[in-house]
Amino acid sequence: MNTKLYYISILPLIFLLSSCSDDVTRSQPVEYTSSVEKLVQHSEEFIPTVYSYDNGIHIAVGFGIANSIMVEGEGGNIIIDAADSVVEAEKIYKFFKNINSNPIKAVIYTHNHGDHTFGAAYYDSISEEKPQIIAHETTAFYIERIMGILNPIISARSSRMFGTFLPEEQLINVGIGPFLGVSQSTPGYMKPDITFSDELKLTIAGIDIELYHAVGETNDQLFVWLPQQKALMPGDNLYKTFPNLYTIRGTTHRDVKGWVDSLDHMRSFNPEYLFPSHTKPIEGEEVMKTLTLYRDAIQYVHDQTIRLMNQGLYPDQIIEMIELPSEIADSPFLNEFYGTIRWSVKSIFNGYLGWFNGNISDLDPLSRKEEASRLALMVGGVENIYLQLEAAVTAKDMQWALQLSDHLIALNHKVNDVNKLRSIAAEYIGQRSPNPNKRNYLLSSALELEPGFELENIIKSDAYLLKQLSMDNFFNILSVTLNPEKVETGIYRACFAFDSGLKKTITLRNKIAEISSASTDCDLNIETNDSLFKETLAGIHNPISKVASGEINTNGKSAEFLMFLSKFRN
Image 1 (tube, rainbow, N blue to C red):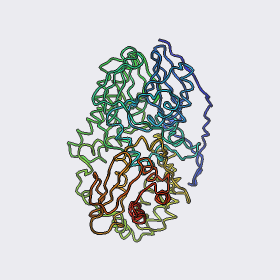
Image 2: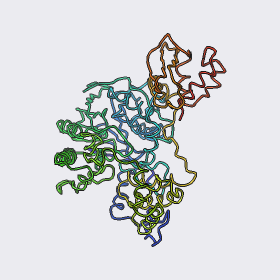
Image 3: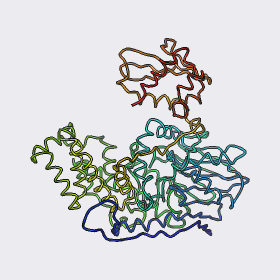
Image 4: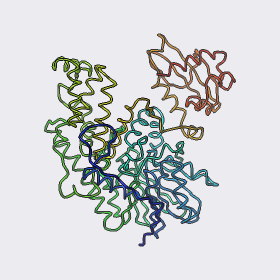
């Protein structure tokens, strides 16, 4: 079957390689190691290209971090994964539309990550009839958690891992794509209206589609099987780099054994075409070879971690003992350009046994400050630790420098000077790391240590996005943002009645905020519009002005309501 390639705006990347001077300072040109040069070469995977097949499948690679797939049907088409922003979706669709301009009948999310869901609103904006949004039944829950109670920390750590705020010359790629584009526009997420638990078979625009729940990189992951085309869309359960069995931006535990089982389920269909949500498509005999190799690599790391755990070894010992066997280690699909074996081992250990590694000295360790104080006493004073930090940076012993800086920060000793040295160490390690997650995280952390730097939230909101999120999400956010220092002793109850008929109650008791259904025994009664309340909590509106206008009716207790809201601020 023929493959047609549409290349877009390819500009050659020129990397200046030069040697470091003997002095260690910030922002010097770096001579890449051979492994970093491999990461540079890996960028060829993300040249913006639309790969078109004469079975009616087209995949856009390299426009953002995630791929987007269009399948042609009878009088309509479907999109599998909607790109990481409305901006990216629009760029991609210009090429899809030139291939086939029939309306988009459905958008399928392979899982909850924003780089697969945040472009969906674009397809709604160009359609006379709203496309069906199809996903696993838990996808909306995970999206709301990321955009809700975990938004600040996930946004910050994602910005570091993907190098969102790095200068262009420092960002090589992000391992599974050229860059993260979610900050280009407000997330265009649309809540799914068709969901399923284990499997779903349906026909849209004459296309027979089979969807299967397939835990792996996320708990809500699914894969798409098109039986007529013998085509498999594995979502993020396979891409051309060692998988992120754990991600340093932070996530729930990833079921590694379940990931292997999901790949085995995919293999059972004997697909001829594989269209991953990251990196290039595969066809022919390479599909089954790759699926088998990938699942074997994951199982090897899982099984050997368990074997060594059962021998009583700690995670820090196990990570030094596991390497992939030579039969699979040299595969280009297992270069550590995203996940690493070392991080995976720690996550597998934690997933089975929890945070306690079994070492009694780690069961209830000294506080950071107390440990640092005793170390300072042992070496003859805190200034001697600082001198050791300077010596470590001069000797380019940068990991030791980072660890020494931890002790000095805990003791609040010469913090500005320590942060300058810590920044140098982080940049040095980052520039030489072939793993883009580690590289970008360290380089970003070095940048954050610069005076005056402010990390922005990459997940922005507007009225359209807020309508997609449940009211439960907003009350859950209030619960976890309650500042206990601002809560008086006793019980206080605020009741909310919305024009949709929804009623919610927040009970302040024992320094917590209990969220429940409506109560008749209320100290404060609030009546308002659902959308207005969401937008006010999101910072789009000033609560003072909305109270003054009466759009938020406090029943004569405006000052008391504003004081109540102030308790939910750090």
